[in-house]
Length: 243
Image 1 (cartoon, rainbow, N blue to C red):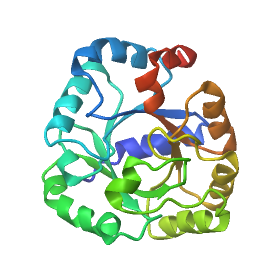
Image 2: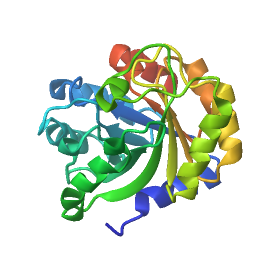
Image 3: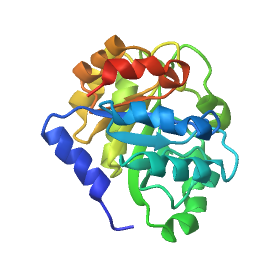
């Protein structure tokens, strides 16, 4: 619980102006049989972190997938949980996500309280993360499961104020999310405005489908970019991201 290695390495990488890239794996969609081939591409790419999680995942599925991932890569494996059932001590860390863009108390604090007994008995590094859902062009699983609405893409002041509030509440990271498979990624203008207003690392994910959108996110101020669906649909994307 006191280990801060993952977070400290993120800070160190940002200070060195290194770009961070997380590959998001949804246990419901990931084929363990395909793990060796998939992670050969991951390990040859510029990926720096592995996130594991989804909005709706069966119990035990996350632990099985994380166990297989740990066999295939030395990259840090961080839980990106949609529910307490997705917590496993097999991972290295967990994004302790608070959905600060919504007003459903279960996802602001309720699920967190319910998860504590599991986390206290684990060796997971806990990284407090302010999670902000941005409208991405279609209803997402996050929206349905949490029963919250995403923030409008043009609500710049509200988005930046929400991110800053997360920082003032003591969160270690801000995560701007358009949602899995979003039609539109988080805009460059939103990323820039949020980055200018906060002093903690900024993660951006959802709807990034090509190298141009990835580059735009970095240039706009993202410290870490998360890609999931694009790799699920087209592993050749990795060819553009080779070391």
